[in-house]
Image 1 (cartoon, rainbow, N blue to C red):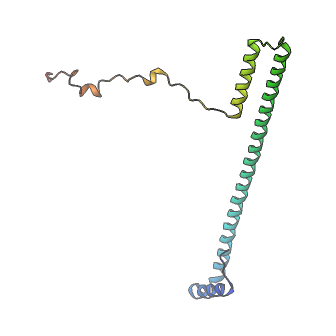
Image 2 (image 1 turned 60 degrees about the vertical axis):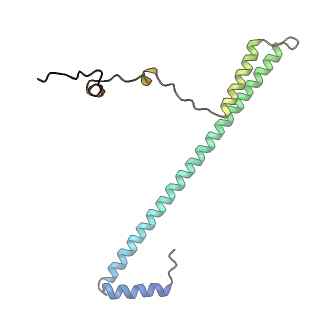
Image 3 (image 1 turned 90 degrees about the vertical axis):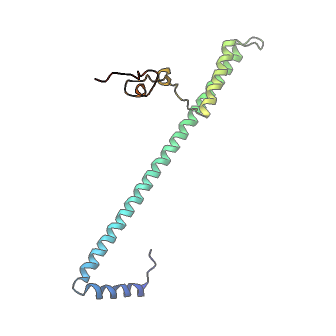
Length: 153
């Protein structure tokens, strides 16, 4: 991981022996090994959580794709059944306007199922209306509505 060889470790050990001393070196090695183990454990925990979440996301994606395919299949079957009903009910090639409008509505519905469109809600007219001016805001600044010669009390 750090690409440290035997001689680098030996040099680090000798420097630590000189700085810390022979009495405290075993405790330092134990605590260093403990914290490296804890760090490795936390990294492995994070990796496993990430892979679990990615697996969940992949399953959810597959489920959504399957549901979309099922909806499209049902829409196509409905459209085909409408076309068959129209062809059965027509006499010599004339179609009723209600059946043709049903086919057109089904085609429009299947087009919407392929590409969902998000539409914004209309804003109420009351939100776009200008706000009335209160006594403390612009009324004190407006020279037309404020009398210039007010008696002081």
